[in-house]
Image (cartoon, rainbow over all chains, first blue to last red; front, top):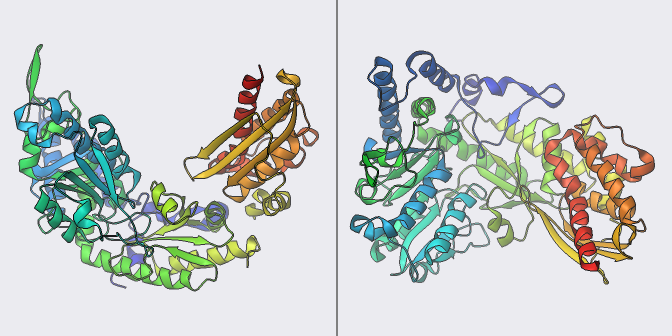
Length: 420
Length: 151
């Protein structure tokens, strides 16, 4: 294997604990949230023990150090995705980052001439896909509801890919924004962004990528992706919860009206009204999640040292093995691509005559942690006519033996319920 | 192994051969409940004879999609409440709810709960309690609506 997961595991204290009945933990739910290496925990703790203060205010040494730590975290995160620090907005998570853009677009209606270009209204269209996580679907449904715009979407092919047959019709002169997943959290599919972004450019539409499952798992360089916005969460990439990122093109962020307002984001405040700071501060109202941003930077450093190419290759090997081992079990059907081509390490499956909740329960009993349900992407289940799936998702600390435990667990569930 | 304590034979029997399943006429109220965390769904109808708390539950019919726990629970629930008065059934419902909220510490009364005592093991798993309660909550809601219709 390209990485040494047995060695990597030692950096993650939680992974050495036992679960139900003293069994070793096999953690296959990193798609929901990843575990944290000691280095990330230490970075947070050190910030609180040594430098804690409210950033961007205060005249004391601690405030200076805290601000330096926060801004240095911004630079680290920026380099991790090939961006400039001024294009990185810290948010609570990817969900908030996407909502930030959605609300900024609807706020544009009343934000003056500079924001005019972002105005969305009746006759305008927003395009998403049927494989979106609810976080990249519901905010756009709601934006359409607020503004009178129309929501449209790419369908899916039977093998779990984006159906691009209607690309030119779907993305047209009326399209204002295309919001797509960069890697499906259920199917694992990595959609082809290039032709979609090219078509969006042609018609003057903005492109936002939900990168919550891509930035943690594959090398992402925003200069190579011809898109406008990228949203991701810290907790899925070995970082703390409570911190996420919106990357946006500088010239767009500069013209966009704020989403959340309050302290830290203002320029001048009078009783009659206020003016706002340039980005990224314009979008960071209130005292930010400073220790978490510092922890996220430590996670970026950790991943950079492993090498994101290697992280991706490692997960590809695990995915290939999982597709093979699960595919060998009679009655198991993979929901999503059955090869590793343009695919990440989320492997969803259904088992004949067994509900995913029951599969998950048996796996849990064996110490194998997976996700069951619709994974916050309910339309995918509807599309494939299934109530839910069981999903295993991999990360840097997973081994081939973890995949073996999964496959054996599924066979055990079949035996327990007498379906084979 | 803990699994057997959750998946008792009674539960698996009801899961494989659910009682009273399928939607039937007549009915005074129909509800559709979902468990948004896992997508389990139940459509449930109640047919009452009489009015108020003394009305007799003449039929409970349902169509459900979900895990073994939610399916078995719908089957056991319909067995328990059909033929009882609303007042009697509400007592059973309360007893079952209390058992499910007991985190494995409950001492179910078999005279009241009959087959439903088998769900005691489920109460140890907070994530599954909702599965066991789905059909019960749907029944309670449908009954309240049916009584509203009647009055």
